[in-house]
Image 1: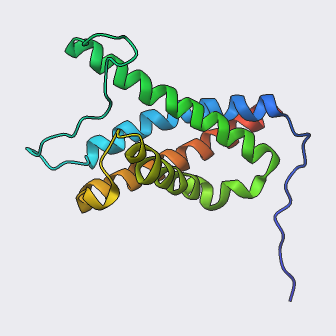
Image 2: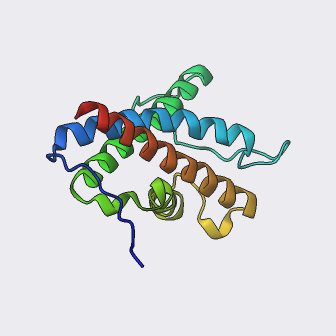
Length: 161
C-alpha cells in the first residue's frame, strides 16, 4: 500500500512577499469579516451595542458621530491589514502556521483579541460577561477572517513567485 504525498513547489522565502501577501489577504478578509458580522451580528436585533472603542482619546476632544464611525472603521481595517501582514510573514517562515487553512489563525486571533487584550485594555467586556451570541459571533467572524486571509495570501504569494 503506497501513500500519496502532496508535493509542493519549493520557493525561496521572502519576508517582503510574505508581508505583502498577508496584508492583501488581511484587507480582503476584513471585508469578509464585516459581511459575516452582518449575517450573524454579535447582538440580536434590538439589543444595545457595547462601546467598541473609547473614541476621541487620541484627538484630545470629543468626536462627532461621523468622526467616531470613521475612527472605529479605520481601526478595524488597519488592524485587519496589520494582522494579515504579520500572519503572512509568519507563514512564510513557519508554514505549519496555516493549519486548518487559516481557521486556527482566526481562532487564535479571537482568543488574543476578544478573549485577552481588548478586555485587559478596557476596550470590551471580559468573555465571561459576554452573551453566548457575542462570543460565538466573534469567534465565527474571526474564523472567516482567518480562512479568507489564508486563501488570499496563498493565491497572492503564488502570483508573487
